[in-house]
Length: 113
Length: 112
Image (cartoon, rainbow over all chains, first blue to last red; front, top):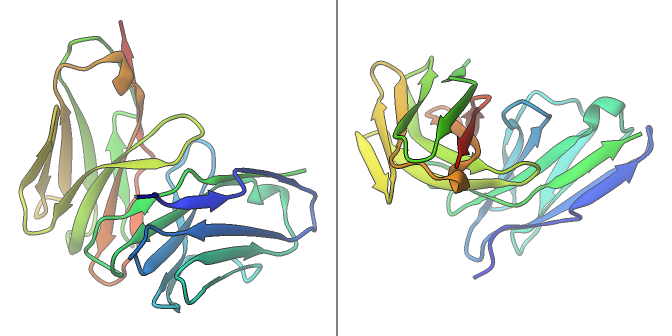
């Protein structure tokens, strides 16, 4: 079975541009969460979706948005990119919305220049 | 607000040593605690999940313990190998929310 897949793996964008990151969860998993990891830090929570509904939002500006589709895949959108948005963006998949093991994808490395 | 601290920040050991990584958290009201491994520039690999009702979990050479009342967990790695070199992250899932709160990790280097 395929694990959590994220696309693209690497991305370079210019300040002010918009970016869309994609995530496909493990088959049968209904919860998808997004995390941002800057160099030398642990991942920081951005969003969680369960059954296509937003279940949690971290302390990120409104430039960040996400959605989950009927097939449980998810998109993370970031508008008006800043240099500080450069990070590894990680998607996590779990069977339910809590108390179950989280499995992460390989991440998308976003560089904003 | 939950805070997770991992000590030490970095650790260098010769191959074959047994070692302990520490994780502490400030709010003991958690659903579970999960240990991950991260290779440079890569995603996270789940190592062990401990539910709040459990005291420990084992997988191969790895053993993780949880003392929820004191807000502590340890990851024990037996007979370390160079392939164990990576950053180890501890994360807790709180009772009020279903998100994971991470520590900054322990960077482990096992030399041959």
